[in-house]
Amino acid sequence: MTIDIIDLTDPEYADLSPLQLAMVRAAQGKKDQIVDEGEKEKQKLFYMMLANNFVRATTRTFEEERIDKETAAKVEVVKEDLLHQLAYEALGSEGNEAGPYRYPENPNYNLTPAQRFLVVRNYYMEVEDDPSARLAAFSVDSLARSYLGEYYQTLYELLASYC
Image 1 (cartoon, rainbow, N blue to C red):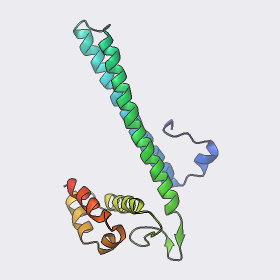
Image 2: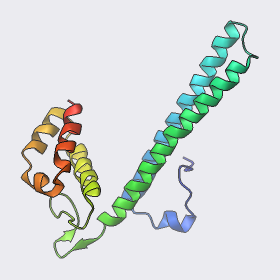
Image 3: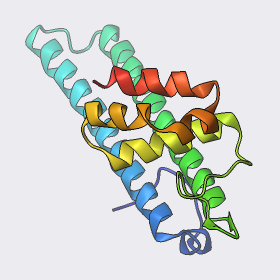
Image 4: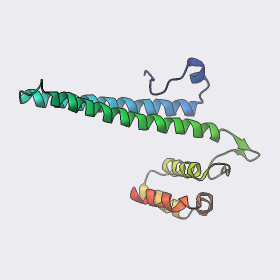
């Protein structure tokens, strides 16, 4: 697999933890899938226009440019998400006398509310696959209520939207 979603030198790749490397590979897979879908859409457009004797029209050029822009925007979202995950994982590797920061065993109160939201969201997304069970577990989590503060309701609504 060629990894081109983020630009890192060989020493920087060597410094990545196994979890971070898995995050990079997963993001690269998402990027490759998005690019493949864009290429398939352009190919479908080409064949449709070919069937209608419309291949050399400037409409095709404009549509392909639109598809390329949409693909680039989707890839950028994946890249930004990866960078945030890598930054968070670097924060998460730190700890205190109770061990490394992990929610709910050892929550990190030095994080911003938005970062806390991401930590708790990632925790519940990994712990439970069933959306209803995930929402039920989250709704009885008293630590999450105090840890998230005003973001608790936002995360509750997000998890409820998956049901």
